[in-house]
Amino acid sequence: MDYFSFKFYNLGINERNEYIGSGAMYEYQLKMNPKKHRTVLSDKIAFLKRFDDFAGRNWATLSMIKADAELANVFLNCAPAKIVLKHSRGQAGKAVEVCETASLNRNCLIEKMERNNFNLLETYVLQNNVLMNLSPSALNTVRLVTQLYKGEVIIIAARLRISINSKVDNVSAGNIIVPVDKDSGKVVGPGIYADITKPDEYIHPVTGVHFIGFEIPFWSECLRLVTQAALRIPENRSVGWDVAITNTGPLLIEGNHNWHYLSLQMPDKKGYKKEMLKYMD
Image (cartoon, rainbow, N blue to C red; front, side, top):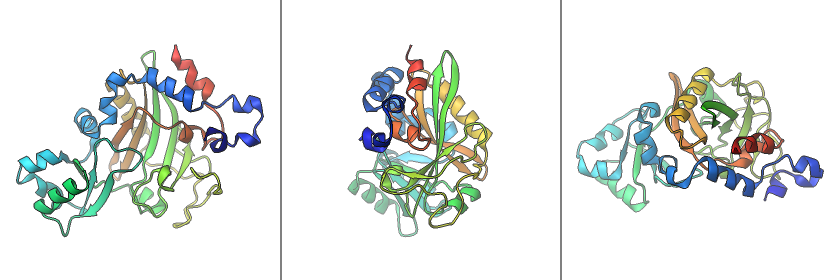
């Protein structure tokens, strides 16, 4: 997969050696984020408990909804009239459903969650108007990768995930990802698909918004948010944070201990092996 994803067939041996592959990335993340410390990142409920003050939204478990007869109304009567149902261990945009609340009551909600194996309920996050104009079909999140090294939080990379007529923004669902300058918050390259047979996108195919030069709002606040989050769980030294941006600022959606090495290197069309492995000491 690495051979084709990174288009090694177009590269010489020295260029190929600049990339970190799946095996080395596995070893890197195993050392950075030991298995005994990963629950706070692999379980969305554990994550929300630890980062509730950074989440910026209401949430409840299925058991909480069952135990409190009035709690469901907090979600069913909120604006906008949408909620997000998840399984706490789901990844890559799977086991997630955005649904309208108009036709739901508490009993229907519980039945729906049980039927679809959802154990987590969240209020729907309304994204910033600038991002809504870019792509309104889903919540378009920023992926910021942090590295804790000798007590300092280093921003390894920044990416913006952009939906293409999809209810989620994950690249694995057929959407695109663009590279972002980590200092300015501006998009500095075209959008790429996980499917390498598809050409790069310079303009959103639905909204017509140009990618290069697009400026993500509240950028300094985004950097501050993930820096504070990284320092809160120093036992996990390398985290891929998913950040949503509203009209009042950023909030944390989740953190990933196994953030993907493809989305790190493919958008920049360069390898990060040297930079990643220097933190292994």
